Image (cartoon, rainbow, N blue to C red; front, side):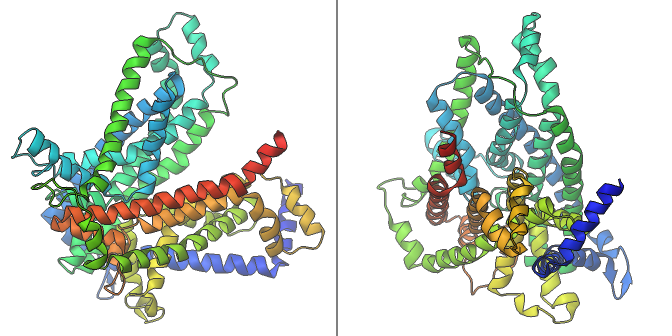
Amino acid sequence: MAKTAHGAALDRKKLMADPIMVTTIVLLIAFLTLFILYPLAILLVDSVVSDGRITLDTFRRIMNMPNFTRSITNTLKVGFMVGILSTAVGLLFAYVEVYVRMRKLVGGLFKVVSMLPVVSPPFVLSLSMIMLFGKAGLITRFLLGIYDNSVYGYWGIVTVQTLTFFPVCYMMLKGLLKNIDPSLEEAARDMGASRFKVFTSVTLPLLLPGLGNAFLVTFIESIADFANPMIIGGSYDTLATTIYLQITGAYDKQGAAAMAVVLLCITLAMFAVQKYYLESKTAATLTGKASRGRMLIEDKSVTIPLTILCSLAAIFVIGMYLCVPIGALFPTWGYKFTPLTFKWFGQVFQKYHGLKAFKDSFVLSMIAAPITALLSMIISYLVVKRKFKAKGFIEAVSMLAMAVPGTVLGVGYIRGFSGGLFHTGALQFLYNSAAILIIVFIVRSLPTGTRSGISALRQIDKSIEESAYDMGADSFRVFMTVTLPLIKDSFLSGLVTAFVRSITAISAIILLVTPQFLLITVQINEFAEKGAYSIACAFATILILITYGAVLLMNLVMKFFGTSRKQKEEVE
């Protein structure tokens, strides 16, 4: 113990002797406090302080609103259903990929399905659902002759969110299934257990913490989602849309702040369970990689039904995404399906200021992405490689943004910066500026990049950096010339992920964007609400092409310049 304490004291002494590192830590703490903790604290203060005294009157007032109590019930109902369905479908896809021998074509479909939600705006499937199954839908009205159906409401939201979020569960559960030692299952098979018995008595118990983790992640994503309920929800309000309407419709900022606190409490509670309980359980249950290769199921009575089921589901999801670019080619959706035309793409730029929208979105995202990637790597470096008292604070606050719904963050920034810091006028210039949008993009993408950086840095031996310090390099030089090149892949991945998340974001920025900035996602949302689906599809198609191009470019850069390629060459 004494030796450990002495080592920690030496680390702190070395840290305090490094002015660059101390300055970095101070600036980082200031940034995280100012742009993550402060807006959330202001929300809490605004919701409980009235006329200079602490009161719960605002909470009582919103609790007596019929639409608010209804929206809480609706949000929880949608969240639980989406969590269950997404986890079940994700498990099916993951199990088929890991346990069943399938053709390469099916594996390719799975990869496309897992990538599509990443490169597309969050409400693309809502557009597709309306165009295919709405009152003027291609399938319902023109193929089946159904005129009185309504795709809006509870089942519309659940369907769209399940199709959007199940790939997240699929990717999470695929990794966990691969790490289960096949000898455990084979031992049960040797004792005469059926495949179903092995799955229910061996595989499923090992996977339960991971299933709980996947459920909570999608539950949080579902209740925090703003775009899909806004477009396809109809009169079925959720907390996220109710908060938005409370500000834009009722102009009740204090009431919106109290509603945002309620939503934040739900997401934080779920995030705490997922982060600090289920993740540790998962790590304890699945202890590393499988010891040897798994014998894949080749029994046609199993492989054929499962492969067909998953392939049809994958093709349906891909078809839903393809519906968006196809929808942009029709003269008038729902009334005239021929001849195909490119006029909507022309109108995007000629009539609806598309060039400015794409320019503003692209420039703001391009500014935010490198800052986010660099900040993520710096935070990861401090968390993994340095010992100081504020390390836990930096890690916790940087990851906190993951649990904060975009609508809540947007309300927090309105209440926190519209009148300046603590309503003193300080930093008021940030409000209604490009800077506030860039900061929101950074804060929203920071947790993803930080997690990636932490994973990469834990694989680097400390002695590599210590040798650079011994040769007289300061912390900045060591980070830039030794650490950053070693985690180049994570940095590039974080860069593109931040760009894609920024250019497709809507929930936080829709409350903060001003007429001087036109953002693509806001434009798509506005046209979709007006029923101008062809124009919305044209905007969305161009946006998908931009984001997909960014991902392809990242893969190309990592292939030729990434550290993984060099390591492979050395191994060979």
